[in-house]
Length: 122
Ligand SMILES: [Ca+2]
Image 1 (cartoon, helix red, strand yellow):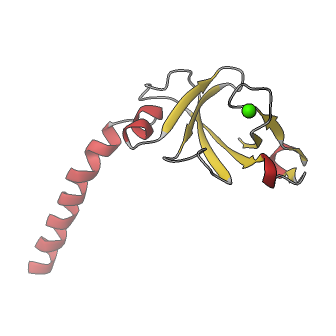
Image 2 (tube, rainbow, N blue to C red):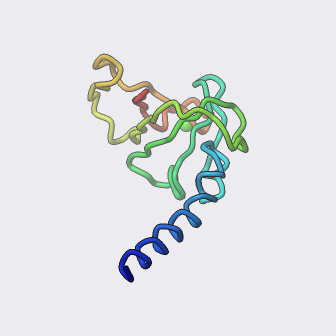
Image 3 (cartoon, protein in one colour):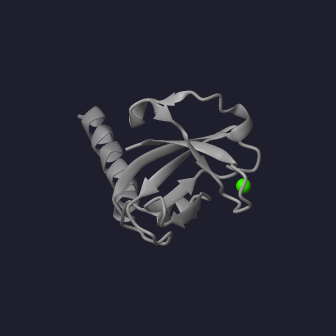
């Protein structure tokens, strides 16, 4: 009986602490609070969230994509991920999720020079 009471208390504690997380929703706002960089890319169709420290000297970055252009949205459909490979490390490998097409060149700094190559997993 004592084991059952201890187990019941443990389940209640887990439920109490798990509920606020679920109530916060699913969107870029939660990742921003955790230190992620979330930016809208209208031309790419959504908000892209990169983990803390990404793009400083990252070899690869996996971004989470949400169906919104508002980085402060707490509710937005998760569209999938995109993997970005730094230009000097991309060797023409195919993107399996895009019919083995080449990665797409991306200029994140706006200087006309490709910074990363992207492959979308939607
Ligand atoms: Ca650039």
